[in-house]
Every structure is written in C-alpha cells, then in structure tokens.
Image (tube, rainbow, N blue to C red):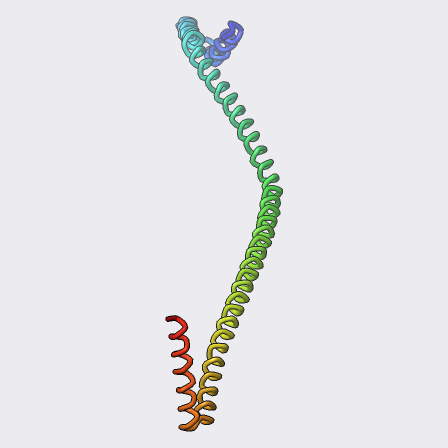
Length: 189
C-alpha cells in the first residue's frame, strides 16, 4: 500500500475528531491531541498490518483468481474448439450418411445381381436334370414298351400257331424236330 494512501486515510479518520474539537468553543477536551495521536498510531498499525499481512494474502488470492480466470478461458477455448470439431463432424455426418446409403444401395444391387445369377444357374440346372429324367423315363418306357410288344407278339404268334396246328400237324412237327435232332446227334458221332 502506498504511503500517500495511508496519509490520506489517517487525515480522513482524524477530520471528525478535529471537527468535534472546534465545535462548542473553548470547552474542548484537553486530551484531544493525545487521542488523535493515539488514533494515528492505531491507524498506522492497522495500515502496517494491512500492507504487510493482508496485501500479500490478497495478492495471492488475486493471482489465484487470475489463474482461475485464465484456466477458465483456456477451458472455454478448448470447449469452443471441441464444439467446432463436433459441429464439423455433424456437418460431415450428412455426407457420411449419404455415402453409407450409396454404399448400401450398391451392395444391395450387387447382392440382387448375384442372387439373380445363382437363381438362373439353379433353374438351368433343374431344367437340365428334368430333361435328363424325362429322357431316362422315355428310354425306360420305350424299353418297357418293346418288351411288352415282344411278349404280345410271342403270345399272338403262339395263339396263331396253336390255332393253325391240329393233331396231325403237331405230329409232323414233332417228327421233323426229332429227326433233326437225330441227324445232329449222328453228325456229332
């Protein structure tokens, strides 16, 4: 604290006492000057304590407040920077979402094309298998039909032969067959 301030403080504090002494003429307090002197000593002691004790404490507190304000300002700047970064990310978020949608649409289109190709391949395979099964069934049916036709032809031939052969024709047939067998047996011997 400056000496000028201390002097101004003491004079200001002493003015009411001086004014009280002049008031009323000569009945003043004979110890007024001693009281003023004691008051001046008390004020000087308080001023000295203020300068030596309270002033450093207040300066420390002032420094702490200033440091706190500086830290608060730095935090505010950091928060503002983070807010700007978040706003930039949010602004970029729309473009990221649009890019993701485009990517998803492209993937969906590619997947659709792949499924269509696989479906077409499966259908072609099924069609080929069906044609092979039909051809196999037709071949089997033809073989079965040929066998059935042969059986019918043999049955029909037997019935015609049986109808055309009477007892005498059967005897001639048996005789011709046995003579053919005998001739074959004779040739072998």
